[in-house]
Image 1: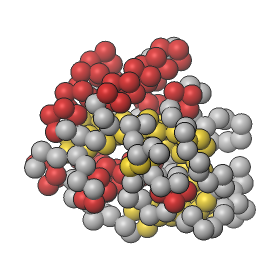
Image 2: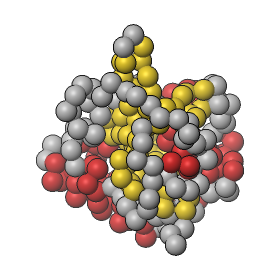
Image 3: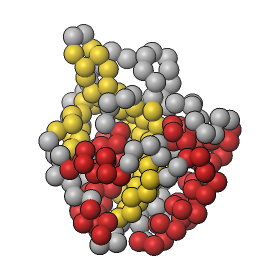
Image 4: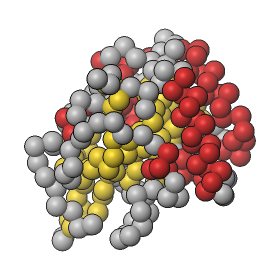
Length: 231
């Protein structure tokens, strides 16, 4: 049986059949406002506080101070583990993408990280115009991080509207081992949030669309409920 990594996100482990498979590359994709960064940070924070697993967060867009301030509203302190050498937050300029492999590798080795987040591949794709090149880079990143014994989340923006696909460039989901899709869409007179495990290589998982909420303590998935989104 494959070894599992508990996400620490309430309800998510239930619909993924026990958590993410260790050393896999997991794509989290969703529209703007869906909570992709919150879920990714929650995965890192749970590793630090619940499972004694160090983490690395690589951002191509937002500044560390901005993300830290946002998640502090959930009571998540990322400064203490960073000062203790258990967490690395890297803001990286995607203009110099050729150096990203060494930066991630060194950062993971420095703190013996087990959890990594790359936020976002959508930003990286703005500088790697060729989808084939983007796919190659994601694949190479996944191979490096597997060898370093990391279970990694990559984030991708999903364009709103029907028939837009589940990722920005249409290649991310084919490189990733598992795909989690977050929907934030208007249904009748209100906006609703729902989550779907689009695929999980080597594992059973829920085939249903489940509701989730962004609560005062972070994201909470409702595995016993089924969502009906206007998709």
